[in-house]
Image 1 (cartoon, one colour):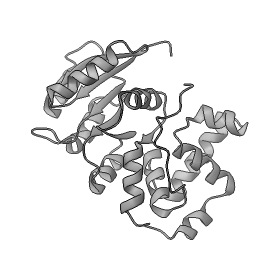
Image 2 (image 1 turned 90 degrees about the horizontal axis):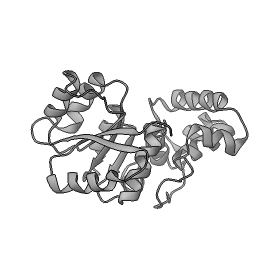
Image 3 (image 1 turned 135 degrees about the vertical axis):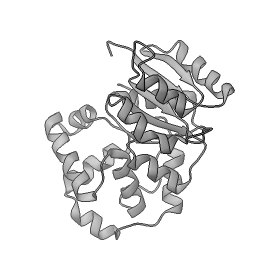
Image 4 (image 1 turned 120 degrees about the vertical axis):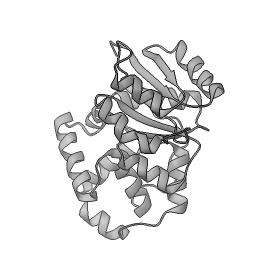
Length: 230
């Protein structure tokens, strides 16, 4: 990646901000350009363009003083439409996970994630990928029931679409899927768009969550960090 991924951190606990700051300080290709303790301050910075550089990606806690991260997410996206969002929180509450995904978060990680997992998630999402942390995926598998019968969802998807959905669930990017299946990135994008339409979702995390809930993705998602080779 030629340019550094510019990251904003929205987190109210100074100790955890320091952890992320230290983790990203010497990370090649990633720069933490600012960190704030509330969504209101983040909105003020973005809306008033208080810094010369806008973030490419925002790490967002949910349990913030004042306006919560979930409630602020639509305004943050509107204020910085070019940014990707990763929710980084202690909450694996069903409603929080689904609301964050529906609000446009491209990733959802628990704070129990390792530093390496967070760094790899930043790279994955910045390059156009999306992911649910293994803890979140396990939670969905263990606690949610399918919104559609497994057979109905599986019948809606072609064999190739199921293959691509499985690779998305493994954290692979479009270019990696294209290489793995020996097809063009444009073809992969077309299949992904059809998958979203058939599952009635807006993004990859929502598709993964729905597939896990229906049991059409593997029942034991990997606990390993997202694959490297970006």
